[in-house]
Length: 114
Image 1 (cartoon, rainbow, N blue to C red):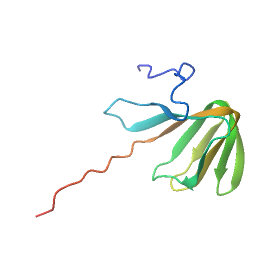
Image 2 (image 1 turned 180 degrees about the vertical axis):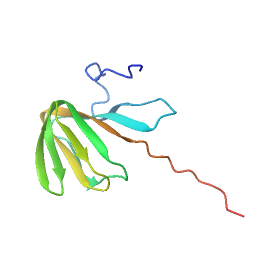
Image 3 (image 1 turned 135 degrees about the horizontal axis):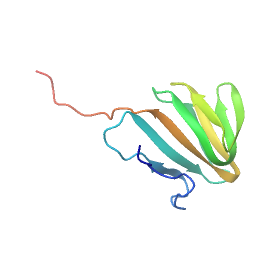
C-alpha cells in the first residue's frame, strides 16, 4: 500500500480546518486530518449518514456527544455512529484528529426524467 501522508509532517497552514484529505479518486473510504487551534471548536451537530472513526493525532480537547463531554488526548480513538451528535473543542495546545468513514457519493443534478 502506498503511504498517503505523514500526520506528523503537515504544513502549518491552514491553521484551522482540513489539513489533509485523501485525493485518490477511486476509493471507498474518506479520511481527513482536521486541525483546531487552541480554544476553537466545531459546534455540536448531527453527523452524516456514515459511521466515523476519530483518532486524535496531537493535542488535547473535548468531544461533545448527546451523552455529555469526553476529554480527548493524543492516541484516543472514538467511534461516532451515523446521525449522532458530535462537536469538538481544542484545549490550550490545539487539537488535530484524523477521521475515517465510508465515502459519501456527491450529489449530482440530473435532467428531467422522461
